[in-house]
Length: 157
Image (cartoon, rainbow, N blue to C red; front, side, top):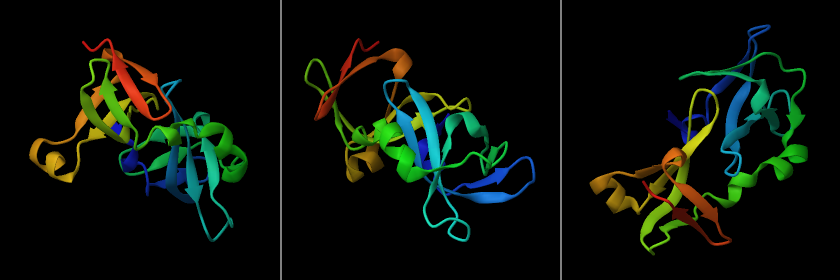
């Protein structure tokens, strides 16, 4: 289990030739599908704009490096992000229970080695984070309803 922010900055290496492809600059995910959809990669020496590596092309999400099979089918991010970046509207949204209790604001996502989205990391603000730590809500223990401005947690175990 790891935070999505831990993926940002990781180098991406092509398995086929052992070539450094670039570094992760963003992650794309779908809260509805509960899955990582891909990563945006930047390599300013080779491309003018960031490229998208879809989830299917991510071979290994290692602790220090991400490995892909080959770089032949990398898409330009601008063409793909708009259709894939469903998760952008989730970050920073307030999460409440159906009883009206505020749980926090979505700060990060939690993913596993198989690139499934496991849950969200919530913040209550810097001071509360320091005093008590951030909360993690896992999808296997709850159900979520996504509103325009808030996310409502139902069926808390």
